[in-house]
Length: 142
Image (cartoon, rainbow, N blue to C red; front, side, top):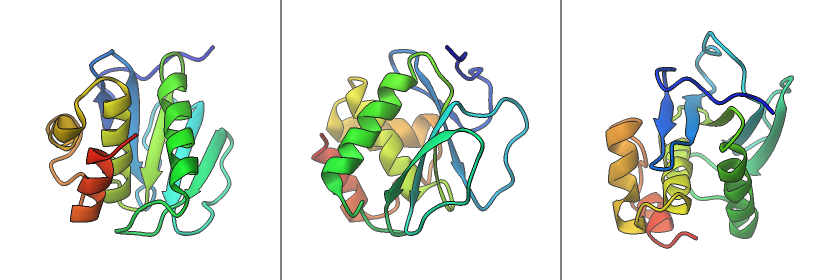
């Protein structure tokens, strides 16, 4: 079992249950500190290889996941694993797709779906969840 992130690690969202999940943009350098044990990458094409376990969801920039059932399954896996492991969720910039996924994780953690975007904007990044259809995706998740 791998330890979780420190609550003060940059880019880490603390969910109401206490689970910690790091969000980030892959176009930025890898942050210093511990590496994730598991990562969920939300990109239009396959991400570059990493040394930790990861899962890729085809998710074009500014849009929604190409396979919504697979996205729901991957988000559930990330949420479960965040209970005991360092989990990272990332897209290219770290705001739209990452924020949308983090808001869905907040829903899984008990945040009402109509409050999840505001929760992530307050506790992760003010620019999280960039488009109206991403907000609608969260409001209808799971």
